[in-house]
Length: 295
Image (cartoon, rainbow, N blue to C red; front, side):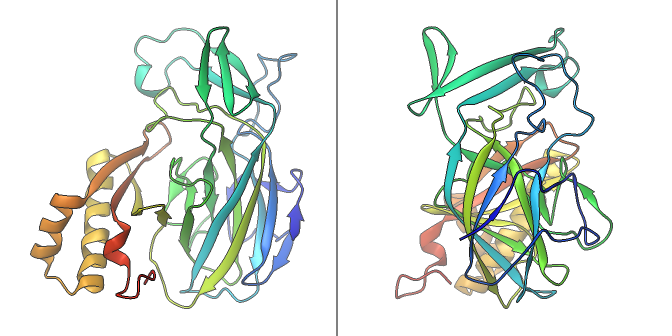
């Protein structure tokens, strides 16, 4: 298995980034990641203000990946470090109107739990906040989401899930980071349980395009979309899912839309980054062939 150390990071996803590792389709890679503050905020220095946020470890040049392909990333393992942190930030998030004090709260990790305070624990649910490839045009800061992936903050990107990313440049240039030990949908305060971690993935190149990020998680398939407003992100997600169901099941746009109304879930990923991110999910069974295989 190949490994990338946590000192090999980028703060923007770009075709100009030099790869720190070359890999082949089918390889397994362990990414050592810093927390979203670059591991700079500590109990000894809680007031520190990092100059940059959301470092992503990488990028990886995947030899077989060409423009128009899809990079399939299977999340095999997320191993957390022993301490996370969560913060409150004035004028940030959905509570900006009444949160007045910046506060950093450190969370020891023990036996799959976060010690929020003495008699209040939160169960860990590790997830990857940032995962993406080099975008088609200009560079995009790792703190932003887009069709290339990036800072999607999707709780479904976790152990056992599969992420599909469109390839815009030869090699794809995969990078990931911003792991959370726990986070609620929306990340409404602007912070999850930010933590350093080791993430093991397997990569595979698929010789067809997915267009935008998709996630397969346990029993559902999600398309992930980001836009300036929730309404626009949801419209984009509904359109992409409708198109996919037409192709998958041979349905008309109207029939696909009715099926989406019956079985589809629109869910918030995050509302605190420069763009909001939503996911629209349908049952995995709708995407299985008659033999029970994913298609």
